[in-house]
Image (cartoon, rainbow, N blue to C red; front, top):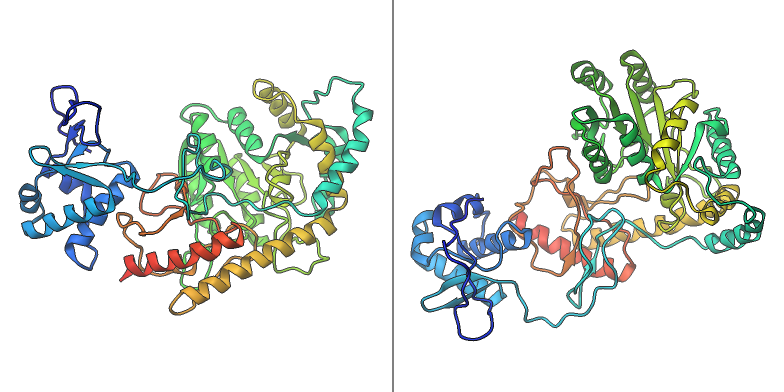
Length: 507
């Protein structure tokens, strides 16, 4: 964004202490036009103009202490009356986003009139990393991360793990490949699902994100291409970018009638042929964020294409246990593992206990050829050396009791999904809402309608969803949907606000 910066240092516009009317930069009329873009999406022009400026401030593209163009100059640049710009500036002042003083003009500020209390927690998990939480509106409905409470069986699993811990206290506690007991349990689970696996094919990691990052550091170098679904999991893309990779988008949809196909095998093969990637990252089960699950034929097509083009395909199966439309006593599997019969050296699988059981349980794993497992174990030495012993023992217990624990987990997530659907039906005019058949994610029905709301018109509510963008090219017009696994009270406040915001921007 082009800004005209005064040639001198900022000087307070009043006597004494620094005030909110310090001018650090000037925004020219031409730069304002570029910044605001297509700002008038309906309704009174002055409201739309003020909301567009406010959205730019909240998005960080218009910094505080920026002097706005005069009412007359902005009106001429935008082709509107001065009455419109004067009313827009007045609205910004009323909302606390601008202050004016004779001789100083109108300067952008951040609202500070609300009394604030410390936020309950700093955003984490799937939310993009930020600084420490310094405050939040008192009535904030926080939808910033897709996490939920632990199932009742978790505490008992830790109790049993503590009973097993003394057998390990005689050693140093460092197991770069993971505890033998957990590697055997993970291998047994893969075998049970139809992919014969031995413990030598399993590396235990400190969560799935650590597994993805270790794979990226091991297999990618600067300038290497990596194919990812678009949209896809934000932090996986960041891990590959951190390894120096150039991301190539593979467009996907949710597979619903009238929508883009969930996965196009022909397009996938064509992409491999054209770009010769070193790595492919896929979410085959309950794709984040579309919810699509690859069919058995599509999985076979991926394996065949990977073998023909000799490219490593990483299948992120962290959500595989969270089918919500299976009976309580069912294993929850909706499709065979991406690895198939397990013989292909080109298919690598990432799994995790964090989504299946609890986010605070930082234990994941990689299933791969033993040679690659050894390379990954060497790579991890510069990061964390080994995963905590007690947490690994707790996962051994949870895997041994997985049918009962996952039944509790899916029951809680199913209730959460049903609550969201009911709130959406109550809040939406036509009651149209749909969630994929898994615990994560669950997006509002209006997010799937044909019209996309302007990103420059934020909802006038306290509903926080600091969500990253899920496309490789970082499109700013299609952000991630908010996560809807918050406590019921937050959801009951948030969903009507989201509905009102949608009605406002879509009219």
